[in-house]
Length: 161
Image (cartoon, rainbow, N blue to C red):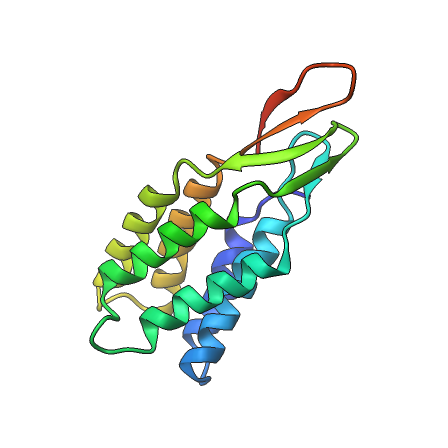
């Protein structure tokens, strides 16, 4: 499989049009990103993203969105940026292309900033917000690389797709 920006957007739009609590929305956004990210590939190898990464992402989103005093667009973007950086740190990767781990997400901060810009536009529809946030997160995620190797070969750096 491969990353699907449109699938992520659709899942986020479902969250934005839903009637759940702030906790449910945070859980659903984290699940949407987790499902999206789990479909990433590094050549013919795939990541095994720990469930703890999804839980941490949900907690960060909930911490921001549940408090009207701190729940600003900038805080939302910063939460996503910091969470993406942690989400992709040393994720195990295995498969035909070799085994290894992700190196990180260099575009995490920029993705968070782009998400903040989308959220700051209160005239956006749920679809527009979902499309914009998905585009920001997808662009950030496309900066993820993994160091993988098939012994005795040295590791190679492979981008996510």
